[in-house]
Length: 67
Image (cartoon, rainbow, N blue to C red; front, side, top):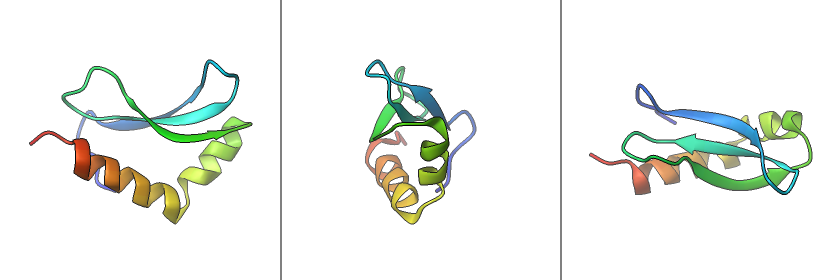
């Protein structure tokens, strides 16, 4: 996962009360929801350390990063 300057992953509480990870990419006003919703912030932090999360983030970067 190679994030450029200004790009970041944030953990936030979603409107449904669950927690999720958002990926902010340069060139987009709104961050992308990575689609994984968990009961606690700590669970999302743990998920972000997995290969599954890393691969998913790489897929989003490949698909949506503007050149």
